[in-house]
Image (cartoon, rainbow, N blue to C red):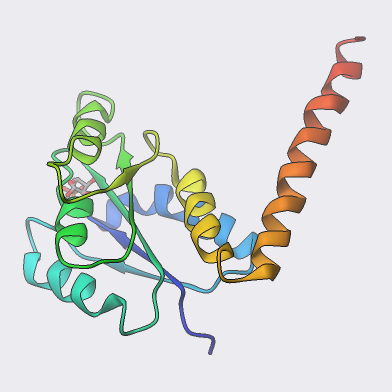
Length: 162
Ligand code: RP5
């Protein structure tokens, strides 16, 4: 089995639909990844151990998916030098704004890259850009995707008769 390059951590099994979007994009780009559940509040020891061991296990980026008072990306970032990409989840009563602020408003010295609410696919693309720095095949796949997206926009003009 190929060693995972990206670790996807869910704060709860209930975040799985957002994590799936990340997984699908990583599959498309053929980047090996792993998925686990570790809560910053309910299993803090597990979250810390995962972050602390990630680099020596060969990960190059961590995607942390969490809702409500989403401490998970920050806790992971506090325990690793790997880049951590936080995905705020629209769980709860305020549509994910709570999680977005929690993920984006990190104190100086502990950086977390935040994507948009439920932005699993963009988190994967950002992780892929990190992987691509040292992997020409992934870089090419990202470039192909970028071109493909542009083509879709151009082709959509004709559907509007433009
Ligand atoms: C966060 O609290 C999780 O990431 C989840 O989005 C939210 C609610 O957790 P559950 O009560 O659904 O397990 O830690």
